[in-house]
Every structure is written in C-alpha cells, then in structure tokens.
Length: 542
Image (cartoon, rainbow, N blue to C red; front, side, top):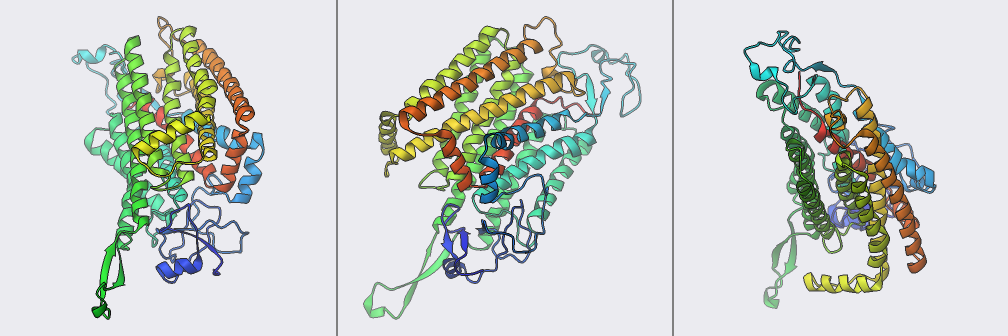
C-alpha cells in the first residue's frame, strides 16, 4: 500500500487516523490486506491483525476475498453502499427495522420437534425410556402449575435453535470489535476459523451439559454458557495484546545529568491505546452483565407468577432504573476522554434502548385492561413530546455542563454537539420502540397460533379466567404503537422548528460517516430480541 493509504491504528483507536508512514514508524513494516465488505478478515499472513482495522472505500482491485462467513447474509458495507441503501426512507426502514424483525420471527417460527409430557399422563410413553408412567409416582399424575405440556427434542434445540441464537450473540460482539477497529481472533487462525471454532466449542459444551450434568433444564445454565461464549473474544484479544507487549512499551531518554549525557535511561510507560482498550473491554463487560441480568430477571418474574400490581410496578421500574444506569455508565466510558468512539456509543445506546423496550413490550401480554395500556402510552408520549424538546434547550445544556464540571471537570461540549447528542438519543429511542413493537406483535401471533404454542405458554392465553387475552393484547398494543409513531413525529417537528435540527438527516449522516453502524445495529436488534424469546422458552427436553 502506498504512503497515502489510510490506517486505523490501535494506538489511536477507531476514531483517529494515521498515515501508513506514521503507522510504520510506530510498529515497523506493515503488510496488510485490504478488507472488503465482508464480516471477517481471514488472511493468515496479516501481521498485527489484532491491532489494526482498515476501512477502505475504494473499488475492488481483485485481492483475495477468502474467509467469508455468512456470505450474502451479513455484510460490512462500505460508504458508497450505505449511501445507496440508507438514503431512501423505505430502504432504510427495511434494513434497520424489517430485516432484523423478520429474522427473529422466522427463527421462533421454526417448528420445534416436541413430544407429549409423560408427567401429565401415565399412559403416554416416555420418549426417552419408551416406558409408561407408574401410578406409584402420584405427584406425576397431578399436573402441577407450570408443568410443561411438551418436551422438546434436545439436539434440534441445541444445533438449530440455540445454535443460531449463540451465533448471533457472537456476531454482535464481533461487530463491536469492528467498530473499535480491533480484531479479537489470532492472526494465524483468521476470523472465520476462530468464529467457527468458538461456536463449535460452545455447542459441544451444551451437549456435555445435557449428557453428563442434567442442568440443561435451567435457564441459568444457558445464560452462563452464552455469557462465556461472548466473553471469550475479550480474553483472546487481551491475551494477544499482552503477548505483543502492547500494554507496556519502552523508550529511551537522555539522562537529566548533563555530565552523563552519553548514558541513556530506559523508561517504561503504558500507552494510551492500552488504556482505551481496557475501557472498551469494561463497556463490553457491562453489556454482557446486562444480558445475564435481563434474562435472569425475566426468569425470576415468570417463575413467581402471579404478581400483584405493586409487585409488577417494582419489577418494571427496578429494571428501568438498572438499564438507565448501565446506559449512562457505558456512555461515559465510551465518550470523550476514555474510548472516544461515537459509533460505539451509538451502538451501545441502541443496545440498552432495545433491552429496555423489549422487556417492557412483553409485559403488554399481561396487562388486564385498556386503561393500563392508556397509562403506559401517556407516559411514553409525554417523554418524547415534552422531555425531548426540553432537553435540547440551552438551559438544559448549561445545567448538564455545570453538573459535568462538578463531577469530572474538563471542557464542556459545545451546544451544537449537545443538540446532536440529544437528537441521536431521540432517533435511537424511536427506532428501538418501532423494532420492538413490530417484533412483539409478530411473535405474539406466530407463537399463539403457530406450532410452537406449547413451547411458549406465555403467549398461549389459554386460561379463560384471565383478564388478559390475545385480542386485547394485539389491539391495545397496535393502538399504543400508532400513538408512539404520532408522538415521535410531533416531537421531531417541534425540534426541527424550534431548534433548526433535523433528527433524521443527522442520523443518515452518521450512517454514511460510520458505515459499520448499519450491520452493527442489525446485529444488536436481532440479538436482543432473541434474548427475550429465549428467556420465555420452556426448557423441558426429551
């Protein structure tokens, strides 16, 4: 590559650029293969693969394109591709909303091979032992509350259902590393091989759990297995950087004593790039903690039904406060002064917005009256129509700047940057609400009428004595969604007229400047939606 080529160096992070000459001075001779619009870079002779990412928007020059994984499904578009796809409203809606929702709906609609539960009827042969139940086990003859109706074929669940869910989770982590311009895999193996091996190891771990431990019926088992799989890239990248001595560099400086200036003193210092990597790892760790906490929270809530109104209120607002706290902490880490990555901040804000709204949507399936839906919608409309424009005022900007100065000091951001930050938050919240509501209405219908109805009793609505029904849930949720769309439109018009700021145009501009954001947001949406459905699946296996 020529001296004028552009490099994303590990030393400067994703948001800073250096010429090839500067990179060569810092790290020595470089021989990097161009990265095309593919998910993995699989060139085994690529030096320092964990330290660099190249974002080349030039046309293809015929280099080797080996190492594709999920070719044609999840690509890493270049700037020109993003401008064509994201520029139009309908294409943008299809890429950011319809495609992720369609993937998740298709995933949960896959018919799971099931068998009748012999615990509910002693005359039904056990699918494993092929023996009927015994009258001596009287407690098995009485259907306990929450007793699963069917048993799921474990191997189909492991390789197809959980396998795809786990692959998307690992893909999400990989996309975050792309935004950071850092590869987590060993350069000798390459991305596709490392990804596939890690996925196979996690699936093998699930098989061992089923064959030897009997812990497969607990949701916590699969949460921890997923957590371990998604945490492994952090361990790999940390180990590789440590082995390359990126955490500690040596330099030489002259002695302070002029009389002994012929001697030199060796000084050891920690580069800023290593600190940024540790901050990035901390933010990713918080995101994985949110994954575990969310699924565990859902499991606790579902296993202790029914709840009083006060219990439900505590559940909702405790989770809301937890997600907002994690969001604020992560944005502080990824913001200026630590990682300093706008694209990573956007991706994580969308992750937490999706996490919060997905769990709230599924509570709609247990609302008992239209009045409860109306109360929720009133709160949602107020937050978007009133709070968002007020947050964009100069008064709010001054207050936040004053509070930031008290907490951490430093230079206060300009008002234009503040408007951009608020506008990004409005766009992300609107996008998350649209995606989660589309997915919720879709999977409620698919899981209520589809072949997996017995595997998802939460959406069965079979107890006629319950006040919540499928009809009430779908109609009221649709009305809430329409109200949210209208509220978001009103809020955008107010912001555009009062502050001269276009939220949509600014979002499109961000997508063009950070083309990796599009597939990253898609991976975030699919992953979070799958988290919710996985936590509601009946884990009873044959």
